[in-house]
Length: 215
Image 1 (cartoon, rainbow, N blue to C red):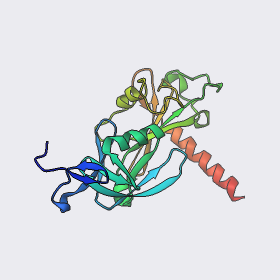
Image 2: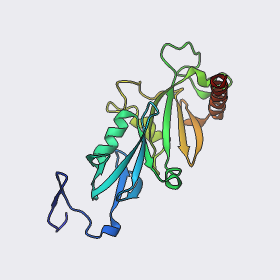
Image 3: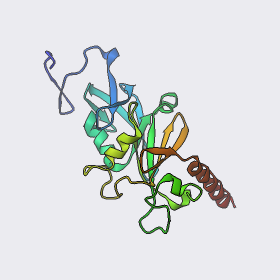
Image 4: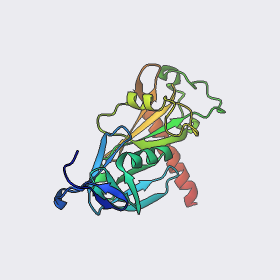
C-alpha cells in the first residue's frame, strides 16, 4: 500500500509515481506476465483478429491504470479485453515491437475430410497441408510462457474465444512470431513438434494469391 494520498485522475483513485521521468505504462497478459512497457504519451498498435490495425495513444494514470485510446483501463482489464477478442498489441516503435512475441492457433474445421485430424504428428507427416487449417485465434506470448501454458490456457472452461473455437487438441498448429521470425509447432499426442512444412506451404499459398490478384 502507498502512504501517498490518492488523486482522482479520469475517475480513478490513482497513486501516480511522483517522479514523472519514471512513469511507464506496463502491458501484461491476463496472468500478469509483463509483455512490454512504453513511456507516458507513446502509442501502441492493436491488430484485431480480422487484421484491422488501430494506433492508440496511451496516457499514464498510475502503475496499474492507463488511458488507452480515450478509455481508462486497469492493466489486467485491458489484457483480458484483448484476449477475449483475439487481438494482439505492440508498441508503435518498430524497433521495440519486433521483439514482442505473439502466437496464432490454427485448427482443422470439424467439417473437413482430413484423415490426420486429432492424430499424432507421425500420422500427419507427409500429409499435413496448411490449406486444411483455418486461423482460430491470435494472442500475446510473454517471456517465460511455454507451449504447454498455451495448451492449458486454451483447454480451460474460461479459455479465450470459447464461443468461437474448440479447445486446443492434437493436430492443432501453434505459430509463434518473434523478431519477425515465425515457427510452427504441431500439437502432438505428447508435447509439440516443429512443423516447418506448414509455414512453407503458407508462403506458397500467399505467392499464388498475390500472383492471382496481380493479374
